[in-house]
Length: 165
Image 1: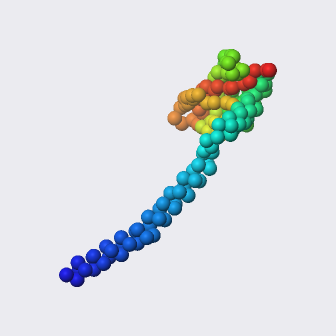
Image 2: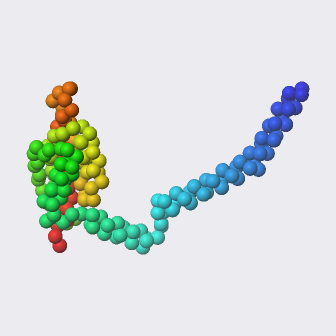
Image 3: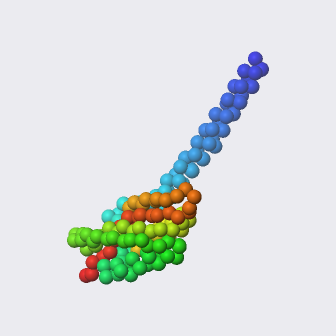
């Protein structure tokens, strides 16, 4: 009998605690989280502010694009990055494609490199941080021997360049 009385008392105390403290606190934290999430995602329902943000984003995107005449310099930077990481360029092929609607030239570039695994990892990391619009589409590694550290890398890049206006 005493046990039932203790359990009933504990149940009443926990129910009052839940209703008086936990539920309002959870609602308050949920509202706070929702407002912070709205700020982080830039939730603006005003059409003019959405348009203005889109225009700013496009401008920033266009500024990141290297001009078409800078393709050679861009490739030299990639080659220097490879050399800085101890890699040797064994071959390179590229094929340009014009995207007329967006005033873009897209270069599909295939690089064949040789070096160590650590050098390749460092090269790919540096490539990720490159200021130009370079995308690693695919890569393949090949090691001739399980004993040697030499690795061959074939990486397919896409370089996005803006046409001259």
